Length: 268
Image (cartoon, rainbow, N blue to C red):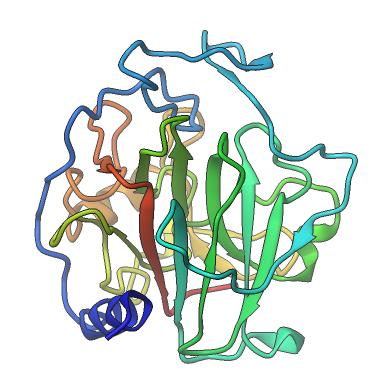
């Protein structure tokens, strides 16, 4: 069985189960969370890059925000660094005939870098540029309107220049549904969650998305964070598996720079 097929089967098999509390990431110290999570690069904390984001960490950007987002379909998997995106959401969201997924670079919040559309059960493989640092999120056509769309679950990824990579799932900026990230360099390396914590959430835990107007769970960051949301999510989720605290770093590493990211049923 090819790797892509085995990854799809593995990720979809665990769709209805709670994520085991596994912490197999190594060397996962972080720089200051701002809240774009900055991973230590090359063991020295920062690497030479083109722009400083104000935290002592600088970033070489893959894409200029003055340029339009880049649409992609599945690329050949030759065994190198990259990420499988798997759509575990059975709902077809709007005119996209599936779900739209967007790559945003850190501090480039107005215009996506990459985007694609996947039908329920669909999968795609993509290799971002070697200096990518940012997030993958759900969305729709309103993500092209030139405004910030921050509210929701963030799957954060960054690649080191030697091909290794880091990843996590964060609820600090909101929660629009579960996501599981799997490192593909060895078995049983997971972060994130696969259970539904939106259903039955208390009334004060919700916030409205810009663009679609849909309601999902609010952000929980220290600046303007919703304490009701955080208390609710903390009842069901482990901060060692998903970002609920700035001070706890549920990061996973991949020595070969390869991940699979499964998005389960969510709110667009």
